[in-house]
View: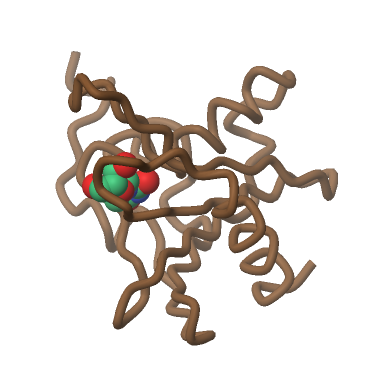
Length: 132
Ligand code: THU
């Protein structure tokens, strides 16, 4: 599956966003090494800190279907932003925990822009379990 196809699945997932407070819908799609894709969208709550991001919903969706860190191959995230949608700090910390540092992360928008990055770039000097 190429990055455009993975991004299309993230755009489809974005339609499932529950974002009545921010009106900022985000979609994500996580490709696994066996070809399966797990999607997520942001789910908000009137108690704002409980809002969950699209990226983490996609990752946790995969894990609840038995996938583990070794299965993760690529992530796409998308929103209706001027430039490619960049993941929040909380999601970056989860990437640092669960993704290989060079795993492709595709950041996109509805204009079709796609920028590739990875955890090494998004989370320099990451805090990890190695420190504990
Ligand atoms: N959001 C995501 O889903 N992913 C990000 O990386 C950035 C923020 C969501 C959280 C909240 O529902 C809305 O976007 C506005 O912050």
